[in-house]
Image (cartoon, rainbow, N blue to C red; front, side, top):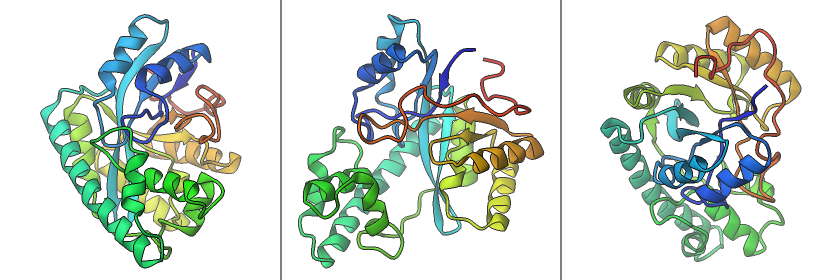
Length: 276
């Protein structure tokens, strides 16, 4: 069976490898089909496509779109998109502009908590002048000695009720799905188990996602326990959603699993790639 990894990041958002390095690593690890899904960004796709052209690996053009739903932030993957689509490009451009403004507010919040110069510190970790994210602040907080490891940051900082958290409005769910469909892609709700939702709220989210035109769920994710994988496979079957799989790879030392390390999809689901 071909190995699919449909969720990975490069230096064009918050990954540690360039798009070409990411493609080479995936190919060496036996990945057959890789999606580059940088946060709200398409600029790394041309480099990735050039690297994939000389390898047996097939590259899928993608993006991970930031979305607001009620009072939480969601991520929706756009897979097999046309990077030249004006609606998608304009929408992502607006999101990136909002990211820059949010980053300054995060820096101010951390300064109020006694951590000065966090914004400038986060900028040192940015590998793309077009995007700054919470991950860049997290890397600064590790470097400055406020936490030992990156995964500890999001227990003590940058989340609701902790220093560095700021409220922000991203794209609406129907809006983001509309951009992805305008670009000819499929909209997949990323790592649904990561969102801190009650079972009732989760069912409401999935129903609204499907009603808005959503196409699939990321059933397999490093964020999911075995029980959650089973649950999301059931939700996908119940709602007629396609199932996807991705490592959410960010780079060596920062990811729970490596490229291509996800197990096979559960039986009874229809893969998002079934007609590719």
